[in-house]
Image (cartoon, rainbow, N blue to C red; front, side, top):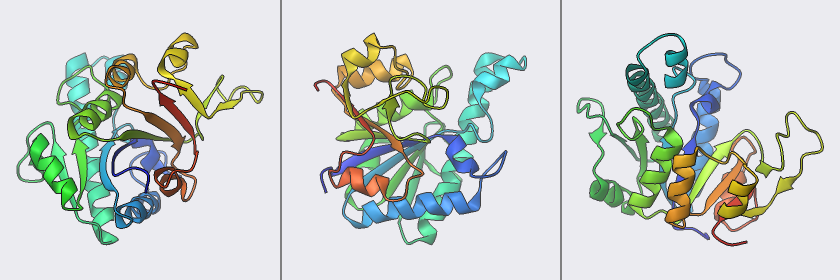
Length: 237
């Protein structure tokens, strides 16, 4: 495999499947099997998952909730998703650990960087929950931060589109997919790869980011085996 240690970012909405709210068990099983295939091939896999299928902090703010409180509620939603993904992975034979940025000892470990790395070295998938543990930061930022902390070679952002386009492909049928783009060009084109904090962190630490369609069977495995899937964002083109 091309990469030894990676971090996969999944949105909470990815777990919706055909449901309008919550977690689709069939979709969860699909992700577990896709992840299992690369872990069994020897890749050390960490995951950050969002909570948008249950609650998004920004939506809470729009409904009149205190903004910080709403963000904490969103963080707790990511813990629910992390536990669900842990269960799905263990059902397909993959050992996992959930580490939360907000301590809740009865259900998961606190985030400890060296312990997380040790789990990865032992072949366990580590799922990082509760974002950064601080309000006002997205799970994109949490994913970038954790990827840098554990020494991941690449950040994989699983989405519902097969890469980064010159414009929104769902609105513009003439949009063209980019196979490789530099951080600088992405900023100049104002392409919304990630939120600005996450993007800046990736750029400063020269962390490559691959944006791809997580719902395309085998895409995750093909990326990690070196195939040009999705769009690669890196310091050089």
